[in-house]
Structure formats: structure tokens, C-alpha cells
View (tube, one colour):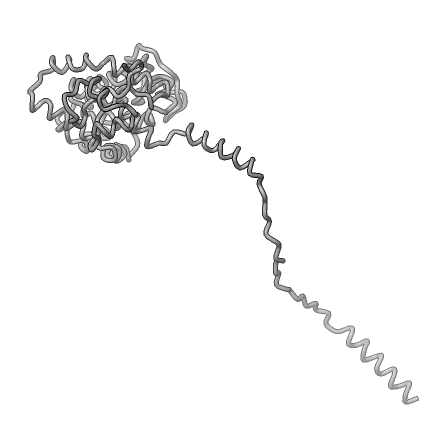
Length: 303
């Protein structure tokens, strides 16, 4: 009897225990990622060589931005110098605007319409035009037969509008004042437009072109007629140069505008020509050259 009572007591105790709280306790184990063997891809040597050839081709075809800008300056500096002599617009400002507005001659607008300054049609324009998306969709921009027309029209655009008249009271060698003045007159809506122009001018020392023109005028007291004669002598070469540039053959430019620090020897190495040929083509009596001087560095049928 006692055994039976004891067994019943144990069963009752177990039942009561099972009827108690059934709160589940979850145990989280920290996840430890399994170490995987490093994957090694073996590429056949032949495939690597073929890929390298493709990469080299891409390197050649992709235009280096800085080189593109240098090519642009060399091609169009003569035009900027001519416009400065005629209209007193600093060559540095004209060139910097051309570089910025046309992306060194590589923008869609400049390639499609030779418009290097983003000049819009406006109400009095009767020439050719293209429709291009800019600040607004489908805006009208002037189209020129040749970049020379764009540079000339840029000068006329600034000199014929009263809102730009105060610029011509500024010193021609004060490119910072001109850059800020263009923004003040409403040439561009970009608040950083002046600083962008100034940076281009200083990075590429475009102010040296201003100094060269002003020094020429002061030293030799050349009048406008004499300067026009100089312009006529170089105009044919300028057109050939800019046409070559537009055809994406800027490395074959026939003309080069001398920059600070350049020597005739350095130019002969750069263009792979003989120094004697450079002197003969440019009628130089010595190896001396000056900043801003325009030199023939290649001829189609050099003899």
C-alpha cells in the first residue's frame, strides 16, 4: 500500500510540474562564417596579351583632357590675339571662355556648329542655327561655317551690347576684373564662372598672350592698319590649323604658339622636325623665340 501511495505521489508531482510555466528560452549562437579557400583564376597568357592590345588602343583613342586643352590653345591662340588687337578684348579671356564653353573644342555644340562660346541666336540673328538643349530644352544657338566666325562674332557680341560696355574701361591685362565683369554683365548664370575662367588662365598662363600683345603695341607703337597686315599674313595658316583641329587631327597642327619656357630645340623634339627646318620655315636668323610667337612646326610637303 505504501508503495502504491508513493508511486501515485510521484506521478501527481510530475503532472503538476508539467502544468507550470512553459516559457520557451531561445539560445542564439554567434554566426561564424566558414573559411573558404581563395579562388584563383588562371588567365591564359594569350588572353592577357590580347586584352593589353585593346587597352593600349583605348589609351590612344581617349583624349587626355589636359592635352586636349593644350591643343586647343595652340590652335586658337592666334585667333584670340587677332581679336584682342582689333577689339581690345584680352586674348586670355577669349581663350579661357573658348576652353570652358566648348570643352576645349570637344563639346557637341562646338563640333556640330563651330560655336565655341555658347552664343544663342537672340532676336537679331539671321544666320544659320542649331537647336541644342542647354539651360532649357530646345534652345537656339548660332551656327558658323568656321570657328573663325565664332571668334569674330564673340567680339562683336561683346562690343555691340551696352551691358558689356563697362568692360572696355578695364585694363586689358586685368583678366580677373574681366572675368568678374562678364559674370556681372550676365554672360553666364554659373556663380563660379569667374573663378573657372581665372583658373584656366592661370593654369595655362594665358595672361602671357595679353602681355605679348600689349608689349608689342607699346614697344613698336604699331597702329591698327599695321596689325591688320600682320593678321592677313597669318590668317591662311590659322584657317589650316583650325580646320585640322576640327577634323580631330590636332596632333598634326601646322602652327604652334610659343608658351613660356619653350625653346626651338624643345619644339623640334616635340614635333620631330629638324631645327634648321623650323628656322627656314619661319625665317629665323637664330634659335631665339619669344612667348606668343606663332611658328610653323609642320608642313604637308616639307622640303
